[in-house]
Amino acid sequence: MKKATKLLALLLSAIMLTSVLTACGSDAAATEGQDTTQAVDTETDAAADTQADTAEGGTLTFGTNAEFPPFEFVSANGVIDQYDGIDMAIAKKIAEDNGMTAAIENMEFDSLLIALQNGQIDAVIAGMTVTDERLEAVDFSTPYYTATQVMIVKEDSDIAKAADMADKKICVVQGYTGEVCVQEMGYDYEAFKKGTEAVMELVNGKCDVVVIDSATAQKYVDDNEGLKIVEDPDAFESEEYAIAVQKGNTELLDKVNASIEAMLADGTISELGVQYTEETSAE
Ligand code: ARG
Image (tube, rainbow, N blue to C red):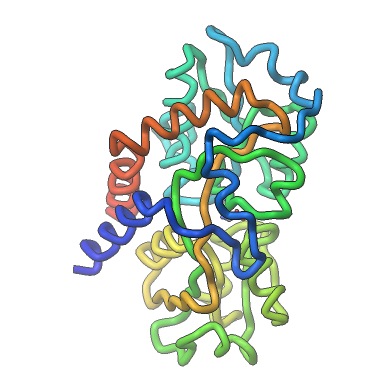
């Protein structure tokens, strides 16, 4: 039953792309990334760096941080090299739709936008939430997934809402929107490099709560005994994942958007959501 509920929730979140996007009260200009007909108003020549090989027959290099199941993780038989997950399947399809081959550069989450700005990668696909701050640095595609921050706690925890974290030891992942949320709430916290590290801290009783994205949280709860998810929609607003490209790279953005919109319309993305939540929680 738990699984059925979870699948339904994922399915719904993949479809419900009309919701307003903010990252926990950061007041993001939600609809910006959603309107594909909107002209990109900042034209820079920074985009020129990577445009050369993003033509038919070329390689489309996506940056990711493969520490975020079910969106990206390392696996024996990934869809792009050793990289597997919903985002990796989406990246592969975007490249294929444009007669290109997808390549992945795996790096720290914090380095992704810098690598994009430097032209080291063509695009970022990393379960990355559109936020006002990030919109200052890069352009985002049409959102393809709606998520929210949740709290992972021990099954016997008395944390029932975000405010209950006030006197607790909070763990987050460095650079994730979850860190921004906790920061904005004014709580002290400890930041880890990886979600698994934060969850191990919780499992070992060294912290009381991990704040992280919903689908990834579900994966950790499935994989570790004695944990549960606590939601607080009043405290954590919905977030939307989108693909980032260099500011002004409308050529690539148009291609990415065309693929994303087709995958949303024909149900590919909701199917991937179902497929990867089943697979990753099978063990
Ligand atoms: N959605 C969150 C954010 O944008 C977390 C994304 C983490 N993604 C990853 N591939 N590690 O900050």
